[in-house]
Amino acid sequence: MGTRGKRRRVAERRRTSPAVIGGVAAVVVAGAGFGVYALYGGGASAEGQSTADAKPKVKTGPLSATEVTTTATRFLTAWQKGSPALAAAATDDSAAATALLTGYTKDAHVTGVTLTAGTRVGDKVPFSVKGTVTYKGVSKPLAYDSALTVVRRASDGKPLVGWHASVVHPDLQDGDTLVTDDSDTPPVTALDRNGGEITTAKYPSLGPVLDGLREKYGKIAGGKAGIELRVARGKASKADKASDKTLLELSKGTPGTVRTTLSPTLQAAAEQQVAKQQRASVVLMRPSTGEILAVANTSHTFNTAFQGSLAPGSTMKIITSSLLIEKNLASADKKHPCPKTFSYGGWKFHNDDDFEIKDGTFKASFARSCNTAFISQAGKLSDSDLTKQAQQVFGLSMNNWAIGVPTYDGEVPPQSRAQKAAELIGQGGVRMNPLNMASVAATVKSGSFRQPYLVSPKTDGRTLATATRTLSGETLAQLRELMQYTAAYGTAAQAMSGLGPDYGAKTGSAEVDNQEKPNGWFTAYRGDLAAAGVVQAGGHGGDTAGPIVAALLRMGG
Image (cartoon, rainbow, N blue to C red):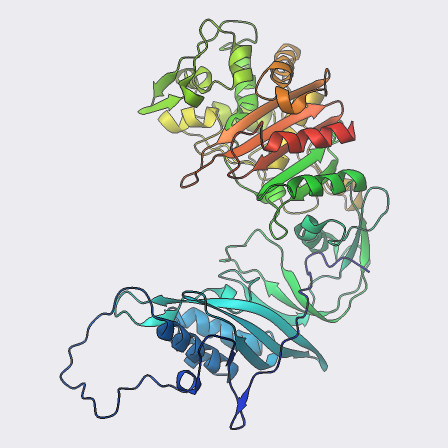
């Protein structure tokens, strides 16, 4: 069976048919207290009660159960009856709701819709959807679950359905639409490096990767397109970096074949490792070639490992160190300041628990991840020095990687004052993902940047990104010494235990607004392997992402 790539199926779920009242299909509600009163308008003033003299009041406070159920039923009933304008009037964004609900019939070709409401939980009402998709004489049943939330409009207190595209289908982001037509691209069968088929049954987190492979190679891999209902990502979509997604195949296409560089054993191991955390991602690659051997995410819907945009914390100090060494502002075995705090650009920067290293070397500061050792050098750097270093040596922040599926290639924007200093320690405007940071470790190990890739460039003749220069032999040797020392004696030592001597590592913790614990980062190399991982809201990288990365390096070595 070919992988669906850009168009994965959503399993059909059977539900009991809705009740029929007087020949008209009605929204059925399990245990929510929805009755005929709620379904058919109820809500009028009690008989004999005069409202002529009542002054309009803006109702505030929590929504009552009746307000939630009545509002939800008004919306669901109108949608089920095929009245998008009436359904949209029950929402807080009637224009967007009208457009999407109208397209549900005209563009997605869904008819015979029945909606069954479930048990209300606070202001939220889950519901199931059943219908039929018909296009070019081909029909298939459609079934899925969704939910809506009722909110109180601030201007008059009226309860309305809080509108988001996900109300119509949970895979929709605001700005997306549903479309049924001939698929843009044929399906593909993706293979690992040994020729085995890659499926989400084997590797649950590879759904977004398969989506990207189909988007890129469907038309050139020799397949034939079919007919499908899919999520079409819009230009204004919050998921604008994601591929379109197939929800239902009306007729199957014939898949083409595309081979990847993934190792089946290492991919399986990566899946197992990230599953141990609530929000983890990891990438493993080969420094000598750039081949990606494994990529995994706890999430099965978004590929944070390739497309995430996160502050990398102290793993960024690898790039910063290469800059400082080149500019003779630091040297591995020379003394380097590491005070408890350091102020620059109006900000006061701290070390973890305000530690300090008295009369220590730069190597000691790197290994213990001393923030102030780097912040103290900000005044000697231009606003664009770090940007140029990331681009020219490490191939980052130029949006030109072509690995075979969509990626985010990191961002190191020029900054001034406090933001410039923050970028030196992987905060401020710096954004990376595990793919980027695995590539940084790989560049240190191999001595030059080789763009990572998932599909060989020989497959489609594409050009890989390159860096304009390499580090000098002396600078490279010092950088490797810093990472090796950190792996042996620094913050990475526990995770990297037993993996030496041909190894190096760097930990990181990145603070995130409104997040109790920082994101934990870890990047390392061992032999001809390099890897990086992040555990979001996990805490220190050595304790969270470190074991994930080390396990793959140990297995791959």
